[in-house]
Image 1 (cartoon, rainbow, N blue to C red):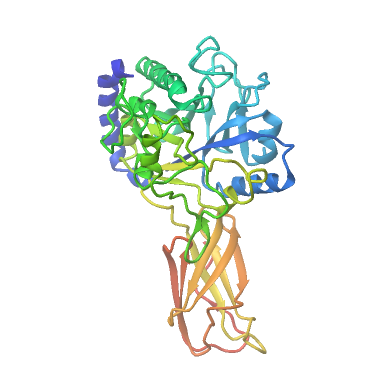
Image 2 (cartoon, rainbow, N blue to C red):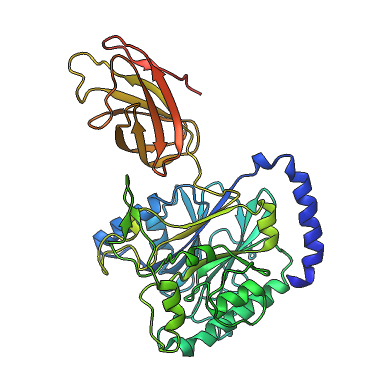
Length: 440
């Protein structure tokens, strides 16, 4: 990649100039990485349910890089073929296979020309003879179509820390150097590297990828020059992706995963010489090339998975011992749902109590999650909805907000308290629904 950087930097600048006038039309891209902990279709029923919930809450994600997948049957049991396309090496019998789940509609290609069955040689970056990549964890490669042409996505699962962190570090470091060598000779400088690195953003392997040369472990937040580690700001906040339990929750209105384990970042460095295995860590990371970052206006929003389905249960029933890590290129915050208040029924026939309704319309992409309804007196109601694109739902208000017959202002917020819509009405007649917006 470094050998071609001057040429591609020029092309990136030209592309940015050509696209600047149409930047609003650039489609954001959301990718995720998830170590699924020996994913199988034959897991305990409670764990199956939790994993199904995780997948159903990956709304808006375009491609998921999976680690530790038993086979295609396991992957497609959760990532259903009507919504996802699974890419995996069907000939491999390894329990720790790499795979991709690609949202239907996203164009992609494999170097082998196969559609879903990754070739054991041409679709992996490294050969089985490379001892830096154990088993079939040899970096699975795929090209996905974006507004800027094809982007190369690399799925990496580094050697674990078990059997001795200090002893195994060299293997993770060597794999980072091998990846750099591959990128230096790649014809495509639009790259996403993600996976389970079994190291944090402060460890030697991550710092090596960030700088493009051999580096030591160091707690730092410096600007990356070779690959941009989008998860480094999460590490600076003591956020982790491995080792969270069911009590790691937060949220004033809706329960969410609380990924902050105070002191975990420093403990990762302090524990190196004691050779201990950390109970928590940000092992799941996402890197992108500077050229790709520039094409997306240097906008990205990286976070850990928020729905508590990822941490529910115990060691045997939890979906995984990791939680997904996601990034959206082209956005700098949560995507704002296009939900609107279409109608209210403040004065139903008979008793108003628990018979008042609100009708919501979704004018954008599908939305599944929580909503906050608030009146002018600052009373709130919490709603859970599943609204496909261009659909409507009518909800009966049971508590919190009451729709005054004399008039009121009602506001709608998503679960991140982003304001979505407000309507104001005056006095109303019994049994007459007030409509505010026509269908779009």
